[in-house]
Length: 125
Image (cartoon, rainbow, N blue to C red; front, side, top):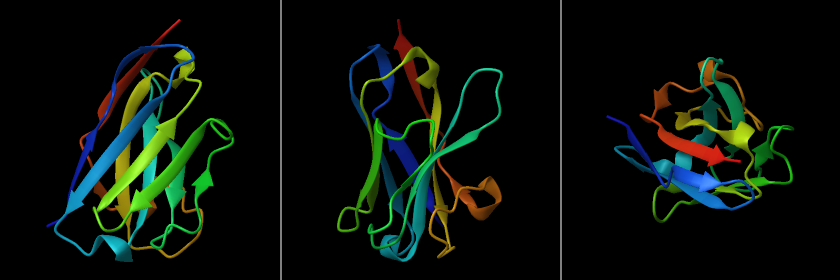
């Protein structure tokens, strides 16, 4: 059974950086596409970034492009989200997700059958 556990969230001030981690177990991590989504209060969950199984094709949503970077370490079964220049509108619960798809830039929730429980990121102004 696949398990995904996010960590690294917290309360920070605008302008600082934060790095989220998502550790996985139960599967061959390097075989799967990984992604980050987020859900702000009162809003639908939205795609943030995805990365191919080899790590060679990171894809980032336009809303965070230039500030957020996704990466992975297949030896550690972990995917990361580096968030720089954080803004109050980045406040959300951040989820990591795992997919069998090989589609580069996979960004739809239905493509990801496995999800973590989420980690809260709160950015104060």
